[in-house]
Length: 198
Image 1 (cartoon, rainbow, N blue to C red):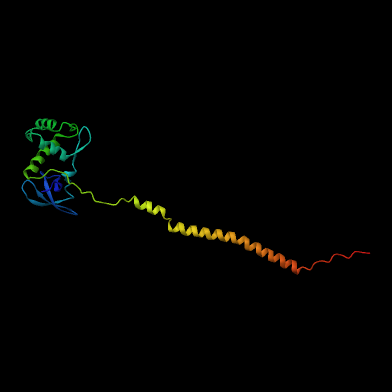
Image 2 (cartoon, helix red, strand yellow):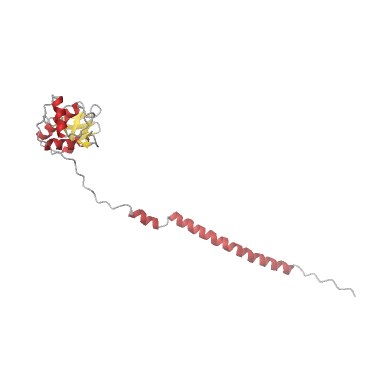
């Protein structure tokens, strides 16, 4: 049985193995009596043990860290009904726990859950996700940055054509103006200078 499939269900005692989930709930198997049942999500909430964190005087720690500390410690588990014994146990096993924010009811649950997990031979460890080999996308933008965008290319060509037309236009105009001037000179008869009187 895998630890990442173990859940706690609000309103139901003990722990459950998540067999399958549906849009309106889940099919779960009790770790206490191995009974299977459907649990509606509109009535109950599900909490994966893997996602539960515990307050400490420093950063929050995963519930797995508490269970591992319990496993390593040789102290006998306290009676679930004795609140003082439970607190004294965790003060010894995990002294960094924030006892002002972690209630006695929470510590009681941790003891119960630990006993259930051990009874079902569940290996208490977080799921290790294998790092997938993904090519770094940083190389792509560098390649794209060297290529001018198609629109930019078209705009650049348009500018070049416009510039070329602008350069040619005055030349044509000048040539036309010269021709017109020449034609005007030819058509206009030259006035003869008035004859000098003798």
